[in-house]
Image 1 (tube, one colour):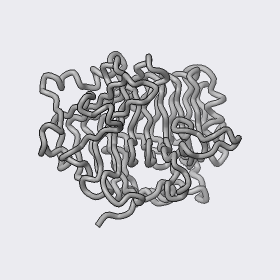
Image 2 (cartoon, rainbow, N blue to C red):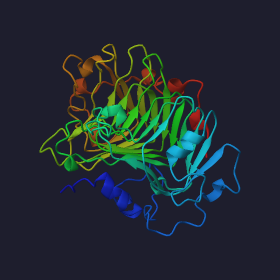
Image 3 (cartoon, rainbow, N blue to C red):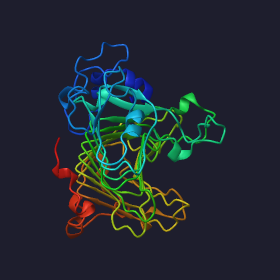
Image 4 (cartoon, rainbow, N blue to C red):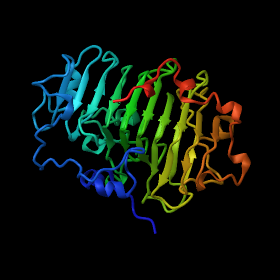
Length: 383
């Protein structure tokens, strides 16, 4: 028997211990038993932990954000607006920040730190969808406009923060544009360590600012969940030791419920998405999810989506017989750059070899984090 999916809004109100029972810990990190932030709970006396405070500022370019008013700002966007130029650090106290946040391209080299050791304690969340009407009457938000957080700047780094979009189809049956992005990342050298990304359709938009920019991104020990195309875009992105979880869709009666990856790699880009040493689990029935489908957008019909999944555990939720599907018949998945290497688990079983394109050992040597990220080495830094 499969339990119904826990909504994003419901999840944010439950305890961290309950989340751990559903396998929601970030990557291999040990799940804690503390409750998630409660706005009615007495605030912690040291909201910024070991990262200083406005009275003991780490550096002149460190700003502190706390929803209870003990920092420089009570909202993340206010701190971003104040942090003009390069190299600012934002320390976020535990709490739920219900807002949309945008980091413009001129705010380079920013670092955001969740002050708690547990990323479940620091949550940035909002609830716009692509089909949500804009307040000014100018139309709907569209997919990109639905993002809770948008990062256009190069050199962005985040540690131990949850990025979420808790818009729900069931609450808005009249809306047809159901894409609801938790975060859209467009800058080069963007890194996320021990972060969580919560949503349903189009959760994590790993993209670039323009077609000519082959933006590099790195996600380590992160947790991502969703249903339709919930990791998508045209960035060169490495997902190392990340956990991807597929959700139940109550609006559908049969398979497929969705697709984990939908890369849209530019044809000229030799590197797309690399998933390495991770795992994919599911709340949905067995074989209800495809591993990927290629996204060839109308804005770039020459795209050749690229995805390599290697040394990753694929749970029973993945359809092992037909793990890939087309988004459009004009761009069949067989003509794209999809490959696997030494994956394990029931979703990785090779029953129809023609449906599981694999790398040779020699080819696998060029599908590594070092090859994808070049002279940028975010995996060598530890906080």
